[in-house]
Image 1 (tube, one colour):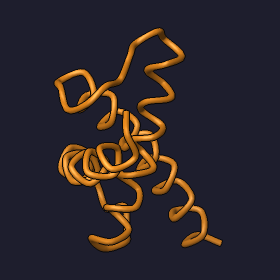
Image 2 (cartoon, helix red, strand yellow):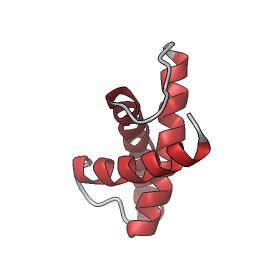
Image 3 (cartoon, helix red, strand yellow):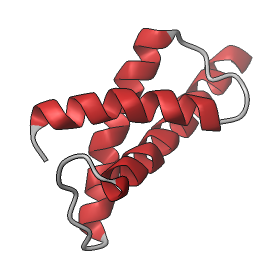
Image 4 (tube, one colour):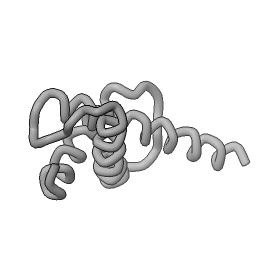
Amino acid sequence: MGIIATLVLGLIAGSLAKLVMPGEQGGGIFVTMLLGVVGAFVGSLIGSLFGMSVTGFNIGSIVLSVIGALVVLAIWGFIKGRSARA
């Protein structure tokens, strides 16, 4: 998938993942967008590991990007939770 498409898809995926993910992850809208973009790249990596081709805007790409964004948000929440306790 192209870089621009991944960026736009990442913004959408980050927003959807923030809605789906329970609890407070911290960070504002910009952190959410950045984590969503990273999640889109992670999602396309996960998809390629399982032999799924991620191309353009389709349901599969959106689902993989949201899954990637959820993974990144969970890791972010874990890191933020640890730093708050320390």
